[in-house]
Image 1 (cartoon, rainbow, N blue to C red):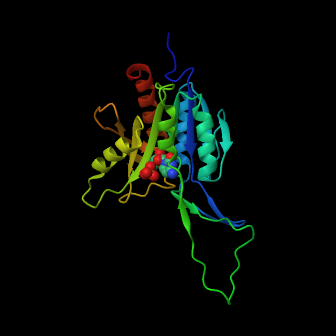
Image 2 (image 1 turned 45 degrees about the vertical axis):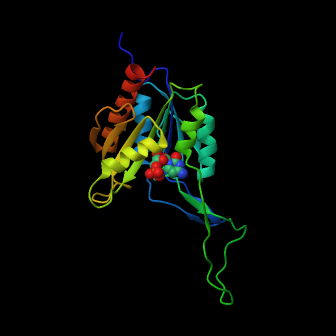
Image 3 (image 1 turned 135 degrees about the horizontal axis):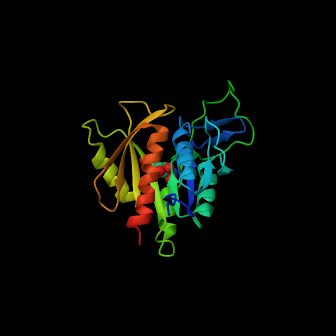
Length: 231
Ligand code: C5P
């Protein structure tokens, strides 16, 4: 009998970019379009999974046939991700999460005034959600697969892989999908070129093409890890 590779699996995917409010009308944001995360959601759905999309700000609509949880900030995404991870077989953190948020959110629009000094923006660190999910997984959910994304520029010597391998180790996730940014633009584009690194130590796997082709390659790899590698 032919079975879809993710049949019966629950897959949580974060996508888009978080927005960190400064006041009622302003925020700190990033250029993530959500296209790669949405493509992953489509690929996972087509592979037979029940998909939960944790959608931060996206330039593209969420696909049909997936459950959507809308979030704005990193702290909201963290809450949604921790809740969704509790019964997910796979968690893919494709969202661009703000590393910092404004230390204070003004209740009223910050005014420009001639009689005061120019404002200085104080920022505080956001939690690393991916790392938290790895810690929370603990022993009770050992078979859960956690997948991170990383946009790496290297150090100018092109040693992107070494940086990415160190990140995989530090974050403790099972797979790390690495974009090499700097030479090509990735954000908002329809194509992507990635290397998939595995903690199991297997050879780095290359995937490139449209974001939908890259998503299929990542989902196929996840199916393989779940069905052949995991305990
Ligand atoms: O450390 P870096 O930001 O490069 O890691 C990227 C990966 O970590 C992505 O999977 C992203 O979704 C996740 N991340 C996170 N929480 C943060 C920052 C990044 O989960 N605060």
